[in-house]
Length: 289
Image (cartoon, rainbow, N blue to C red; front, side, top):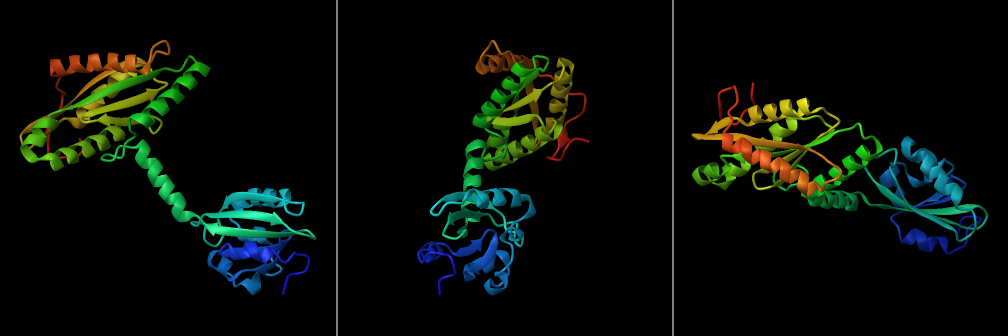
């Protein structure tokens, strides 16, 4: 039986989606069995209820606006991504189409898996596969955003620290690359622990890491460089592992490559100096006290 006021072809849309409802305004007139999976209510019990109550409260304004925008027969709204109140971990993609006599057909598809895959692919494209840190591409994006903020407020200052792990080759040669990879993961963890949430620690590749810090004086950068050296001073299987650090102030009149080159030059000065920290090395891979 065709619900009153709806043309017979509303069933075509219902057949193409696992979850479908016929609405009068926002009141449910009919619901498909597939909808129960997302709202956890049997379809007959949904008749006469407000469909907006089935949506997570934070998403209701968008849902209300989408339904209100569909007025003329044949007019369509969506796709719109919403979360059902009964299962907020699910992501639904909805399409609404106007029918005669103020009726709307709403069809929904579960896109949770697809979105999870997209997020995973996006993460892999922007993060280092070994350490999970931002990679060169994400560093470039955040650096560009930092420069935009500096243009808006020249009082802000951005600094770049280039860090090189000394001793990684010896660990790889003596203990194998799995041990070397474990060392890099630990270095990444320790570096990230020394910076603010707003700062960026990225891995360029190999044994090179970059720390991007914003809105700080140069004295803060010197102190940070010292803390980074302290955090990586370890002895692993007889190999003294340390961090060489060089930094440079960002300068909008130069390319980011030129700024990194300045930091790299200072990093090699630090490496040649063989600078030691004021704490003895730590045996194992635990964090510094």
